[in-house]
Length: 225
Ligand code: B12
Ligand code: SF4
Ligand code: SF4
Image: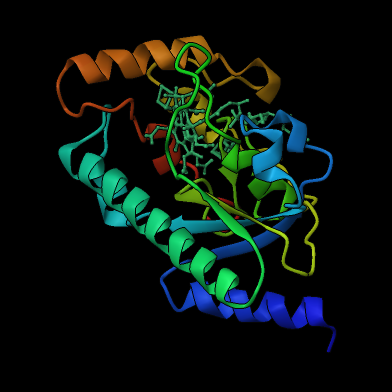
C-alpha cells in the first residue's frame, strides 16, 4: 500500500474513533490565495482535511419556525467538539513529523464581509463530502445538510479525494420552509442578505447571542429521506 493511502486510513480511523462522521482530503493548490491567512503562515500546506460531525436529529426535530435553546446549546457544543478533534488531529500529525494547522469551526475574521479564514463548505465540497445545495449549505448524499464542518491544513502525504457528482436534483424541500424566502430554485440566486436579516431578528428575540436558525439544516435530509 502506498504511503499516501496508509496515512489517509490512519487519519480517518483516528477521527472516526473521536465521533467524526465525515472525512475527506482536498487539494488546495488552486484556492489557497482566497484564504484570509498570511502567505508565510500557509506556505507549504498543500492539502486540507475536511471533517464533518452529524447533528443530533432529535434536537433538529424540535425546531419549528425559529431556533431553539436546545439547538443553540448543541450548536456551541458541536463547534467545541469539532475544534477539539481538529486540535487532536493536528497534534497527531505533528507527532508524525508533518505540519498541521487547525482552522476554527466558527470564527469570523472579516465582520463587514462576514468571512472566516477559509470556507469549510468549499473545502468539504472539494474533499468529496457533498455538493452546495439550494439552501447554500454543503449537502451530503446520506445525511443532507445536518452536519457541521471543520478543516485542518497539512503537508502530510495523503490520498486526495475528488468532488462528488451529485446535486439536489428534483428536491426543493427547503424553498418553502425558509422564513426569509432566501432559498430559490437556482442555487446561484440564494439571497444572503434576506437570510442574514432573519438571523438578526432571531438574535434580537434573545434565543441566542449567535446568528443561528437551523430550519434549512433540519429539512435537508439528503437523498435517503
Ligand atoms: C459567516 C458565516 C455565516 C454568515 C454568512 C455570511 C457569508 N458570507 O456566507 C451567517 C451568519 C449569515 C451564516 C448563516 C448560517 N450558517 Co454559517 N458560517 C459562517 C462562517 C463562520 C464563515 C463563512 C464564510 O467565510 N463565508 C465566505 C464565503 C466566501 O464562503 P462560503 O459562503 O462559506 O462558501 C461559498 C463560496 O466558497 C462559494 N464558492 C466560491 N468559489 C466556489 C467554487 C466552487 C467550485 C463552488 C462549488 C463554490 C464556490 O460557494 C460556497 C457556497 O455558497 C462558516 C464557517 C467557515 N469557516 O466556513 C459558517 C458555516 C458556513 N455556517 C454554517 C451554518 C450551518 C449556518 C446556518 C444554518 C446557521 C445555523 N448554524 O443555524 C446559516 C445558514 C445560512 C445559509 N443557508 O447559507 C455551517 C455550514 C455547514 C454545512 N453543512 O454547510 C458552517 C460551515 C459552519 C460549520 N463549522 O459547520 N453563516
Ligand atoms: S438559515 Fe434560516 S433564514 Fe437562512 S436560509 Fe436557512 S432557513 Fe432561511
Ligand atoms: S432540501 Fe433538497 S433542495 Fe434543499 S438543499 Fe437539501 S437536497 Fe437541495
